[in-house]
Image (tube, rainbow, N blue to C red; front, side, top):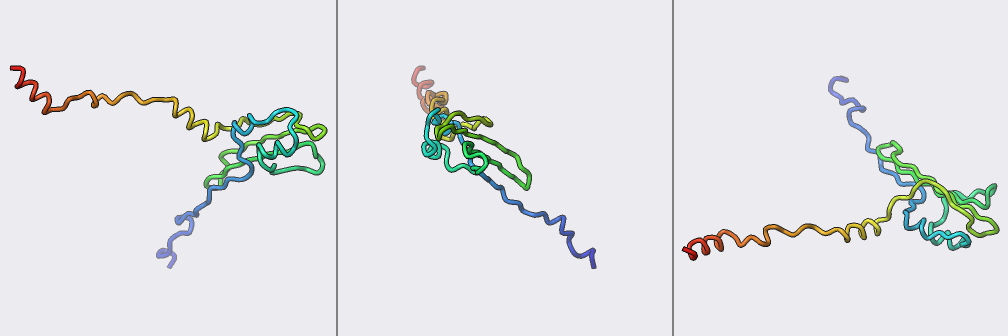
Length: 132
C-alpha cells in the first residue's frame, strides 16, 4: 500500500518570504542630525522596533529577511540620545534607496540606435540604380 502513496517529503512545503522589522535606507539615515529631538528621529526613521525601559536613551532598529525558511539578510542600527536629543548613531550600512537608484539610472544614457542612420534596402537600391 505504501508503494502507491507519495512520500510527504517529496511534496515539499512552501515557505513564505518574511520581511521583519525596520527597513532603513541610506537617504533615511542621511536625514539624521546631531541634536534632533526624538520626534524628529521618529519622523526620519520610523518607530523603533525595540525601545527598552532599561536603556531609555537607545533605540534599536532591526531588520531581517527570511527566504525559504533561511535568514538571508540581517541589519541592526541604533540611535543614542542624551538629554532627549540625538547624540550619535551606529550600525550596519543601509542600502541605497529606490529613489537614489532611479536618479543613478536617469544619469545613464543608452548609446544611439545604429539602425536610425540606416537608410534601408530600398533607399540603397534606389541610389545604386540611380547613380549609374
